[in-house]
Image (cartoon, rainbow over all chains, first blue to last red):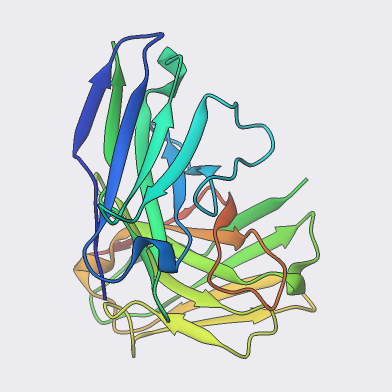
Length: 110
Length: 123
C-alpha cells in the first residue's frame, strides 16, 4: 500500500491564495484519480474536488485541483481565501484494492 | 436530495460485536458503490471498506480485514457494516459515503457523506 503525505497545517490571510500538497509515496500519482475533501469542525466531510480537478456542483471555482507527475503529488489550490474556508482538508486516492486518505491539512485563515 | 443516515453505533466492550446500518435515499442505490470511512476522536479520516453496487465485490483496510464485513441490501436501500472482535482502536465516528460514478465504477471519488455514527469500544 502507498501513503499520501500532506503538510500538517497551512495558514494564509483572507483574499490570498493557498496551495495544499499531497505526495504519493509509491506508484504514480497519475495512475488513480485524486479527490479532496473539506471538513469543518464538528461536521461531516464534503467533497471539493474529484478526479484530480473536477468540482462538484455548488463548489466555487476558487477551488481547483491538479496533479504533477514530476513530484508525484497532487495539489489543492484555494484562491480568494475566505474565513469560511478554514477547515481540515484531506486528499484521497486508490490503488488496486484500497482507498487511502492523506493525514489531513489544517487550513487557518487569519 | 441525497441522504445517508447511519445508525447502530454505541458503547461495546473489547471483543464485542456491533452492526452499523446506513439508510440511503435520493438516488438509485444499486447504481453506486458505497464506502465506510471512520474518524477516531481528534484524528484524520481512515478508509474502512468498500462494496460494489451489486454487492459482489468487497474491499477492506488491513486494519479491519477478517473482523469487519461490509454488505448491502439493495431492496432496502441499505448499507451495513458488521464489526466483530472489536478493539479499543476501533473507537471512531463511522461515516457511510456514496461514490460519484455509476457502476461498474468502484474506485472513484466520494460525493456524499452521512453524518456518522459513533462507536466506542471500552471496558
